[in-house]
Length: 215
Image (tube, rainbow, N blue to C red; front, top):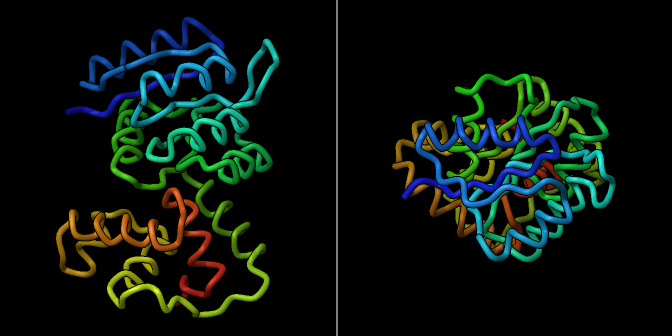
């Protein structure tokens, strides 16, 4: 079954256009919302696989980052991909700290958007070019005392975790380790459970903080 997507944006023409374009690409658009408050209210009823979230809403109320945190608290298996006109560093970092799996600028093409939604549904962290480096750099800055201390993980899980920290997708990791994409995903999900984390962005942060992003 194709991923179910909820679109959150306060511009109705933009919101409806994205919904139509994604539906034509085979996605199930399960709901739309005009602001963060509506998104938080609707999401538990429709249980989207991916929430396409704007960050700033003209009518005020909860920001997209706040709504992201609330939705992921209620639906930890849902993934949030921010789609915003803002490329400000503070906005990107706020979204990631709230639990967003990725951040895409509204200048992205339809092909880029569709690919980002699919990859987000698959568990990848997806960022507009240049923003991934910003996020990883911030994680490194916040790593006060990196140390290799992951005794609860298997050797293979640690290998996969290192590749996540370096920004590789699940398919790239599978090729590098000469194992299947599904096996990589199983290791990622197992590691998330063991470390009590929610998504690949949090996993990358954990890996960097523990010195697992080096060669």
